[in-house]
Amino acid sequence: MLWPDGSSLYPDEIIAGGHSSVLILHSSDTVLKVPHKTLVKGRDGSWMPDTVQDELNEAAYLNEFVAYIRLIGCRGIAEFRGSIADSLALKYYPAGSLENRLVSSECSMPPLGLRLRWMSDAVHSINSCHEARILLYDIALRNFVITEDLTLLAIDFEQASIFPEDTNLETAEDHLGVTVRVDMFHLGCVLFSLATWKKCHIECRSEEHWPLLESLPCVTGIPWGYLIWSCWVKRFRNCGELLRYCSKPRARRRRKMRERKQGIE
View 1 (spheres, rainbow, N blue to C red):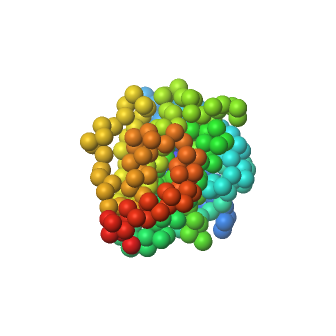
View 2 (view 1 turned 90 degrees about the vertical axis):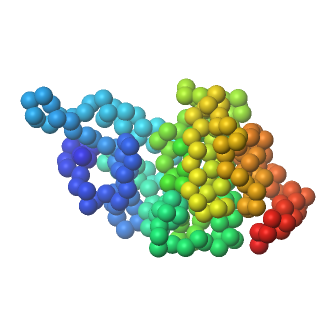
View 3 (view 1 turned 30 degrees about the vertical axis):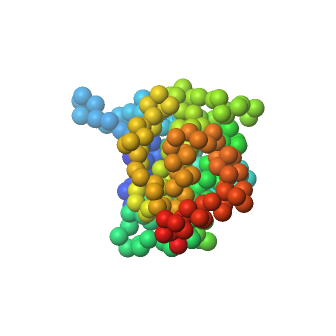
């Protein structure tokens, strides 16, 4: 693997990696997200740039750069620090991703109060993206980081679809069929994971490929069960509706009563 300038990128410099980029520690509080520059072996045995893949990686980098620019100052988004050496500069969050926290054998299940706070954080993060007219699709545990004060922030917008700011997102659809309701479905999976502290990832590529309801996990007896199910059955048209529902005193009382009946402290 190579830096964008063609110099070698060594494995011990990498703190996380993805399909089209890697994260490296640039300083004590800054990481660089570097688009892959890959080499392939030619027929003569020599190594040469994989130009097709490099162009795809560069396009993902530029798309994410535009997304971060659009999201500057929005609630629940990882701190963007511009571009350094053709790489995205981001604040470093040593606590790592939500997925790493969940799957780590060294970490016990966080208290319910903290998990409920994280669920609220996740909703606000995705709502910020939708208000900025950005669809994400790749809403997953690995794309939330934990701050020093135990707040969740969204990170990684390589697959984001960025629409004009006057777009009605409720009717928008990207070239792959992703809509705001697809995002809401994946948000429901993140919320279910936090409610149960078990990883839940269910693929929903578009509204035409919606998972069968009988294939979805049971939400009875878990925190926010009704809200999670509502994300999965398209009851909420967007995150704003979910947040407004949660803010209504009657809805809060109903949710607390349901959780009390279900034995959730």
